[in-house]
Amino acid sequence: MFVSPGKTFEAIARRPTWLLPMILWVIASISVSVVLLPRMDFEKMTRDRIEKSGRTIPEDQIQSMVERSRQFAPVFAYGGSVVAPFGIALLTAVILWGAFRAFGWDTTFSQSFGATVHAFLPSVLGSILLIALLSREERVDPSAMGDLLRSNLGFLVPRDNKVLHALLSSVDLFSFWTLALLVIGFSAAAKIRKGPAAGVILALWALYVLGKAGLAAVF
Image (cartoon, rainbow, N blue to C red; front, side, top):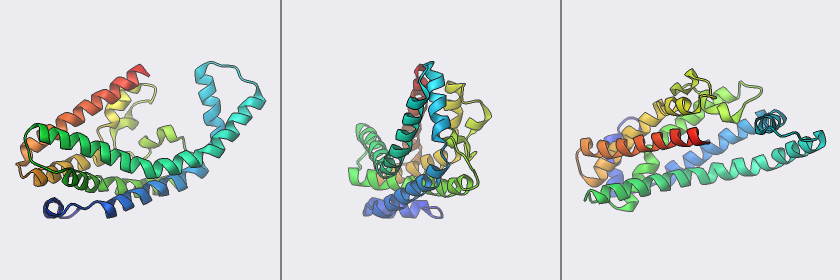
């Protein structure tokens, strides 16, 4: 996938597979959680959240909230580490499969799902690099973790500038790598040229980026 993606995606189009890259993706996601959880400052995160809400809460209630966060964080972290890869791959595959079918390009869902899961393999490499960086930190703010790797331009602006940060964080090396693999994979599955495949995939990605920036502006 990293050295010869064209031939690999042609093989996937003939015989769609997805289990091994999904296992690698889930393992990488769980590994990030294993390294991250001991480095999360739950008290600071809780106090920051209360301060931003403008509420005044007694100290004993704050400590109770901190303890609940510490108890439930592993459940959400490890559960999300398993569910998120499947959810992201499934949603992406369904959208791209539907878009390609709408244009009359013949591709099966199994081909779409196989191509999608393999195209997200760069995220596994990104997770490995992120783990190396997280292991050097004493305390980590999960909300700022996306800027730690410096694979995107989000670190250039403060996180308070939510819309601009959302746009710049989308200018990401691993995202572009995945987009390129999606183009190769879906063009192989649908037996079309890469240009039309790129047009559809990049248009949908642009809508996603604009939607993310819009949500950041609203919330």
